[in-house]
Amino acid sequence: MVMSLFFFHSFLYFVLQISICFSSSFEHHLCSPTEASALLQFKQHFEIISYASYNCDRASFPKTKSWNESRDCCTWDGVTCDMLTGHVISLDLSCSQLFGNFHRNRSLFQLHHLHTLNLDNNYFNYSSIPHNIGRLTNLRHLNLSDAYFLGKIPTEISYLSNLVSLDLSVYGLQLDERTFETMLHNFTNLELLSLFNVNISSPIPVNISSSLGTRILVILICEVFSQRAFSFHQTAWKRSN
Image (cartoon, rainbow, N blue to C red; front, side):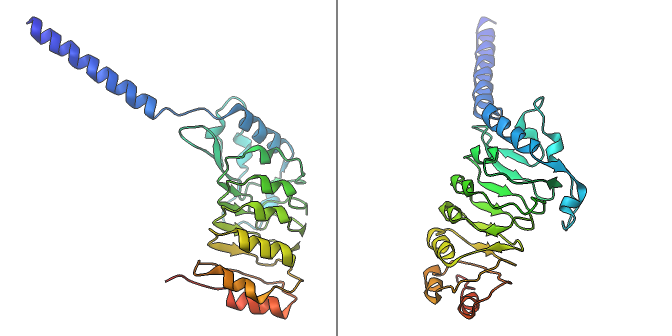
């Protein structure tokens, strides 16, 4: 009887230790207070207006309405966190009805752990793409399409050397030769590049296409005002075997 109780207690102790180990391994860390604050500051700069996402091909809804201090930011709509560290790694605000100016000092650029940033189909009131975009060096996927940006695509976007996909399909954006060349040189992991409606007014060197190797690269150019750029467009569609 004594031996049975001993083995029973030993078994319970073993089960308890195992459960503690598993709970520690899968503990979900709360969102970083600094990153939560940055997101709330970002939210405050925009109005929610339904027509800001009128061009969305699916139902839009104001994701940032769920953002408040009473909830862990990892549970907010559009926000995904790393399960172990709690850092915000993905921000999908596509079709979120955001309306307002996209200032250069955006708190958004404090989210240094971001892998994915999607701002597709909002209305940023013809703001320039901030130079601070180059600070998000961990980005792998960046989508700024149909977000009503205007002006020159900043050279700093070429700092995002980990990008796998980049969508800058916005009418009114301008891309110069030097920035384009630097982008393609630095984006060694790039698989998808969409520049639909981007104004490429400078000649694009034909030899850029030779640096693409066998990577899959899709380039969609509508507003092209250079025969050499058009030639580059035709030769830049490549598929790996």
